[in-house]
Length: 281
Image 1 (cartoon, helix red, strand yellow):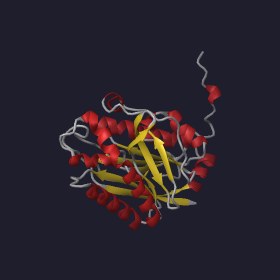
Image 2 (cartoon, rainbow, N blue to C red):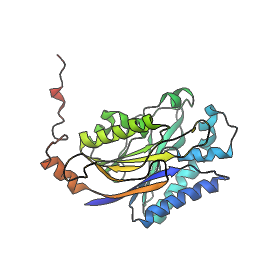
Image 3 (cartoon, one colour):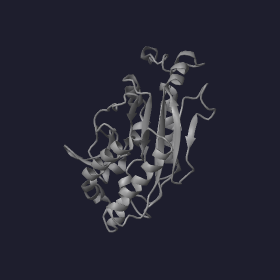
Image 4 (tube, rainbow, N blue to C red):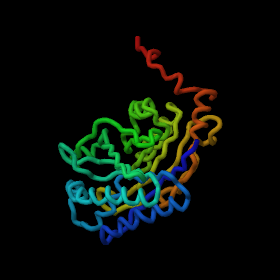
């Protein structure tokens, strides 16, 4: 059994209205639909495109300004998921929660369900400048083979392990990274989660820039990653976009290949994961 997955590299555009932003979203979904994708993963905080509507906004006020679009964004995801038949992993957006505003990933399914995960581990900027509220816990999606870790969350092995313990076979990682080092941290962590859990990881990057904080620059590609052994590609990448360019990485993720790799691979990280070996004397 397989699932056709698309990872979007989303390049920020000048938005003259919220309609421009939703048009950009529609173009991305349409491109994925034309490639027969069943799941589309968007990057973290595509809503930053809407900051062109408030060029003089102070950095600290960004979440409070962009949270006004949360309901419209979630309603759009549900409507377009139903009409396109795609499961839409909405990257992330700002959403009001108890205790403040969270960086949240909303996932819409064609049958009308909305599943929301809040980012658990906040970067120093999110914590100190934006003063976001941290999330607690993880959720599987309606298709229980899919789970989400938002950017920095992916850098914690225990997060991926909890999802895979719950049956997840493809981890979706919406990301926004400003430079090469930040991108490498997320990409290398994503590869590590794929290796140690023998799962697929779908990494979707925000690209482009606003020329000022909070997006003075970005760096990234979007890719669909695999474990690093037979029968997967030598570079453990099924497809990848060009650096810093808008596009889609698209591939069929074959779950029978994952099962075979766990049962017959030259290394069997998932089966060999028992904790009781790691005692420090």
